[in-house]
Amino acid sequence: MELAANLNQVRERIEAACLRARRNPSEVTVMAVTKSQSPETVRAAADLGLNLFGENRVQEAKIKIGLCPARLRWHMIGHLQSNKCRDAVHFFEMIQSVDSLALAREISKWAAQSAKTMPILLEVNIAGEASKFGYRPEQLLEELPQLNSLPKIEIHGLMTLAPWSPTPERARLVFRRLRELKEQCEQILAAPIPLLSMGMSGDYEVAIEEGANLVRLGSALFDPRATMRSETP
Image (cartoon, rainbow, N blue to C red; front, side):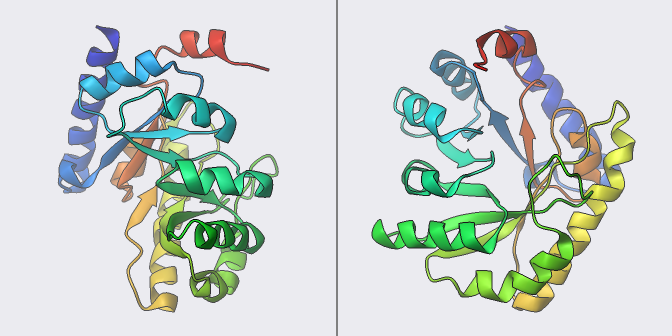
């Protein structure tokens, strides 16, 4: 089965990256990114031992999650609009793409109405790409105390997307900067924020070498041609 072979290869590469970085592979969690993948594909991945899945769109996730095993864990990883916050709080265990104080306030509001506390990651646009969402590092450091004071969110870490490149090594400085920014955030908060969500199918090994403990993998696991065929405009 192609998915099983892909997963085995991913695990081998994670082990090799951890060996190079003198890390324990058990520190690294694989998230399967299932945008445009069917519930049947999700179930097949779950049967192979994956239990954490990431979705980019709230509307797609609302349909898919109910058709998948209840034991699975789901994170929102795509850009979140304020008018989708209520559903995101309901359907997801964590929102990884919080990129503004206004959005965090909206999430906190809906979490309060749902009588829950919402774990979040703060998305940072380390490379300053105009085409991507995310905090500027200096803006994040400035607003961090206000973010931390919101009553119904918990800051669990940082997330970033490195600029695409056919050469994974070019992403190294982006990942290193996010790790350094995490350390600055911990100094401001005087508390640990454990998660570094960085690294995707093309660069996850470099991300692990730089400290990632959550990698988001789509095409490294699933047939990208199938994903493209099923994507809606």
